[in-house]
Length: 117
Length: 117
DNA sequence: GTCGTATATACGATCAAGCATATATAATTC
DNA sequence: GAATTATATATGCTTGATCGTATATACGAC
Image 1 (cartoon, rainbow over the protein chains, first blue to last red):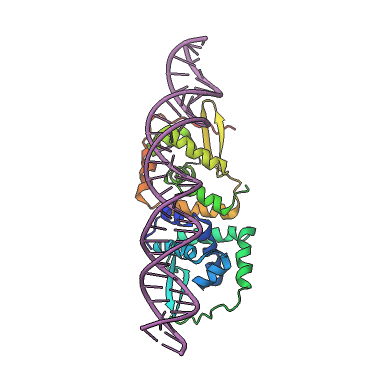
Image 2: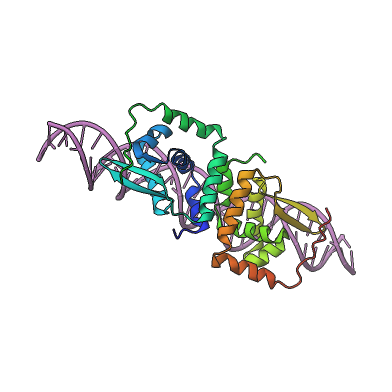
């Protein structure tokens, strides 16, 4: 990954993107409709923010049939992983973000992720 | 400190503020004129950005005569310190930020900081 | 091919944040 | 007191980011 500190921070500087990243860190991999449901926002909004995270190589995606799964980029430099981990650690205690996790847990008919590349 | 993850990241989301924090982490404590010299920007700009960092309790200041010294807030929560440390770690390798450190090292007549509270 | 679901992108509007200039406040020295 | 240095704040402008709506693309089932 070639991202600079400044670009990483800029990419993190949005509530929707932080909410996505928190979920991805906990779940490992999620498709867009799961994230959309968990955050309770409209789909184009999620899609646009995931695109920003992807442009900055903070997440990577793969298609599986009609679903596109996102996960944290495993090839981040050490300092970037540390920033993300510390941010998610801080976030995990904030009520605003807990709501997303509980809503995801209640989602009906979550697509089954085969985890086959 | 009561800052949220989102507010911390927002406060870090500016090149001038990152440059200030990098210097403060290395130097410990600096007055505004030192930072202004090192960054080579106009004084009101430095002052405004330091004010933003102070509002978010990322730095604290103390007056010593006509100088006002800033340093990192020693009372940050663990996750916030980790984000700052990792960011400064990443920054330390970026050429844009090295320039500030070398310029500071060449500053003539740096005010002597008595370190008396 | 059409239809339905999943996801992405384009567009125009709105809003927040940064900028430089100018000015205000505070301390020091005379 | 006036003058100088150090720092902070107010003002008006501009730029960039986010928003919702509408539309486009991709895949699977039929």
